Length: 155
Image (cartoon, rainbow, N blue to C red; front, side, top):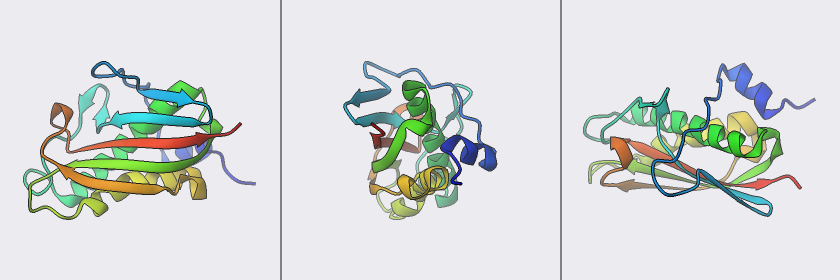
């Protein structure tokens, strides 16, 4: 028998927080038919940014990876809050990971793997996805990463 996303989260020792309220005029999750789009989430725990700064300056690739993993936890929290249950997710289609970095930083894929690996750990093959990871000059609240996702829902 295959474990559910909730069971996999528990096995990983991850308790999803309550979905964070939006920072501005947008919806945290938009559902249209069989698709849900999750707005960008940052590395926040208990309402506070865990990491701030830029990759290649204040933060290492490993710290960026961990920040992306936490941002992915917050993607799951937003998604679970909107859907009522992560068991409604059919699969992850596309993930975008924005990385606040110096112009010479080039390890964006390794940072983004923090999010991608978590989705695969929680959803198995259904968590594997197409992805874009790119550098930006700055992100909200000084975050080093922001993660958004597009998922297909079970009908």
